[in-house]
Image 1 (cartoon, one colour):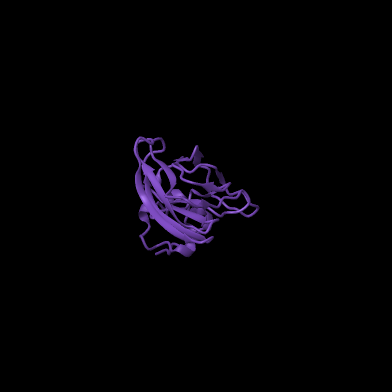
Image 2: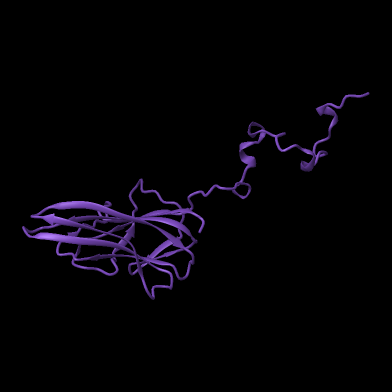
Length: 193
C-alpha cells in the first residue's frame, strides 16, 4: 500500500476533531495565535492607577478630597476606568480590586498627635459605607511618619460601587504635594468578580 506523507495532505483538510489532544505541543503554536479569548485562568491587569493628595490636609476629612492622578514623567497607569469626583471613587469595570491608602503624617508642634486613616466602600451608590480597612499612627513632638492600610474590594457594579477615604482623629497634618506621592491611594484590578 501507499504511505501518506505530510506533503500529500492539503492545508485545512484535517479537522480539529481528528487531532488527538496531545498532538499539538506549545512549541508548535505561534506566539500571535493565542488571544485573551482563548485563555482560561488568566486575568491580566486591566486597571492600575495611583491618585495622590495634591496639598496638605489639616484636621478631619470625610471624604478626603484634593486627589489628582500621579502624572510624573515615569508615572505609569493601566486603563482609564477609575475616576474621582469630590473624593468619591467610581469604577468603569467590575472586578476584585486591591486598594492601598498610604498616608504621610506630621506633627508641627510639641504635642502628641493621633491620626486615623480609613478606606470605606459602598455597594448602594454612596447611601451607606462600610469600613474596609483602618489604621492609625501616633506622633510625638514634631515627628513625621508614613503608614499604609490596604484591602481587597469586590466591585460588583459600575454604577453603585463606590470607594472613599477618610481621615479622622487628626490633630496633626497629612502631607500632600502635586509633584510627588507623599499621601496616595493605589487601585489595581486583580481579576473578575
